[in-house]
Image: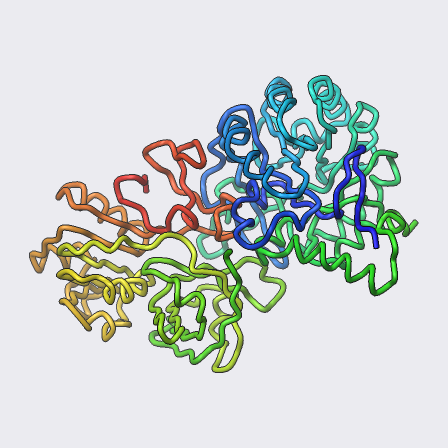
Length: 300
Length: 253
């Protein structure tokens, strides 16, 4: 039985990754299981300098989901390189560094700095809905997305994953823009912009007023968008949005995702990502699937 | 390795209006727990995806018992309040850092649902202790808080003890201490932080904030710190992982 998949020439032992921002840099979850159980670990977004993030409250629970507006708090690329990458190197898994920035130059500076580091992929976050500058400003306009993808590619030594926002009118157009500008892979969906109001306090549940919605409630939207994006481009797609089980992951793979990411489910169950990988194997055994690759995009 | 534990409910009882006491058999967590730590308790209803962080009221290492006293504040805790003898509860813990045990003349200050962690702390401190418990009106856990040292009560409506807050009780009874431990609502902690600074007393406060992962990964539950934090490299610490107990001089409330 083969669970290996290849993304831009890099082989992952299985298609399961972690969604950026839900897994830190892996250290906290490594206290629960060996990260070598995963195809790849995706770090929380890192910028060229430390970012303080948004005021609290930063999260709110919603029906089968949650809203977050962390605001990309991160310790900056130097700490990632000195502390987090050496830590992750100890595990038999691939490393994806998620990169955020306020300007094109910020992104390029991080990408360039990481060029000589033991990083397998760069994921460019052009879809965070919770910061005023950068993030989603690049991810909601195909021209802007194309421009930043081209710039980042000039400096990148590793394959580039462009992480797309679902907060757009036409996801196919965005997927094509990323591909056309040279992206090696696309990943989606980032969170869907939402809002919750505390009717007792008569205020917003989040200090940022709006936040990004994630969790099982967004899964049907994510599957639809992954399907559309996978049909729009030839480059591989990493699917995510509400995956909690191996069965959830199979929906994304059948819709056209080469790999999947487990995000919010890590909060409900610290073993979630590992259990998704096991669940995919269970599915393969149940239906006597020899090679997971035979099911990528199998539902036309 | 950290683990998830499926604990068995021994019994559950409402000890005051909307305040529940849940006794669990949770061998691994009870064995490791120190006063001031908390557990993440997961809901069975799949529509509630985030764990509920609940402070540990008491733990009995030898017999593997864990007691949680919490307020039913929403649908998640309402679900927990329906657990009864023999039911299973999914927990991760103990989480966070507890109170350092300093055997000096101490104040143990609890306000409202911040009172429960003081019960285990009281059991483990060896020095002279003065417990100051602040309530809105209805009392709870007073028997447990009266086991050792002297218990002072403050109620907002004056129905028991000092009319007012915990600091009013301290002033009214002319109390002094060399170390302060406190858990309760933010305005209370802010007042205690100022009191400790004015009187130059070593003071530990337990904070709370909306949490998601509960283990330090998601950065939802941060608090402001005076100095740049070594982990985050900004003036913020993670309440779930670096706290919930902080030295009062290191955080900005």
